[in-house]
Length: 221
Image (cartoon, rainbow, N blue to C red; front, side, top):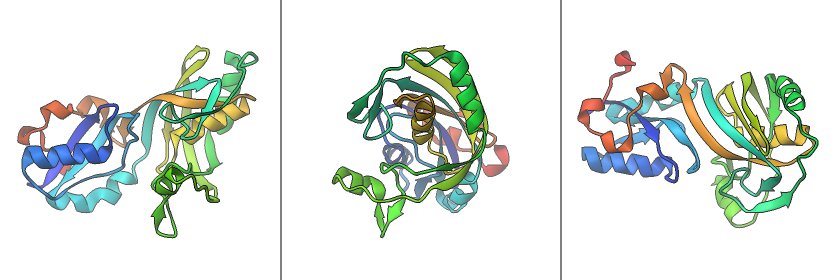
């Protein structure tokens, strides 16, 4: 079988877990994904079957759209609510107006330092494996593009937003940088990938719905 499955990844599982489920459900080995999601994250996960695995880079090049919640008051060692709290902050001086101004400053091409908890490799070793050992290495900033950044809800300590960005953008890092710009600290407590290029959450199936009837061809998407 050659094709594509669009799955709404549930929270608490890895992208590789979903790949394993697909392999077992469809009884096939050649299965991959085009862009992983953290265990905390939900949303659009592109699963590629058979010969379609060769198109992984094509899907990963698409712009991404996320809806996320930044929780002010504490930084964590992972940048999200799955990690351990490193430092606590007061968010008393943060206002909706200052938040909107901060958002404007992040739209466009920005420099972003990749987090230690990422799949980027250092001397052949993924950074997240080094992070588990308590090892931190210097990461060079990368240029990413934020096409739009919109405030969805302001209810401290939570700031919910929607962002459309280029490939390679880390929303966890974006959240941390926004918090810093507000003279505070924070972490991502909720995140959903609602779009990968033309592929939207509305087109996705759940893990429970995985079967041959939902396999699509590239032309169908």
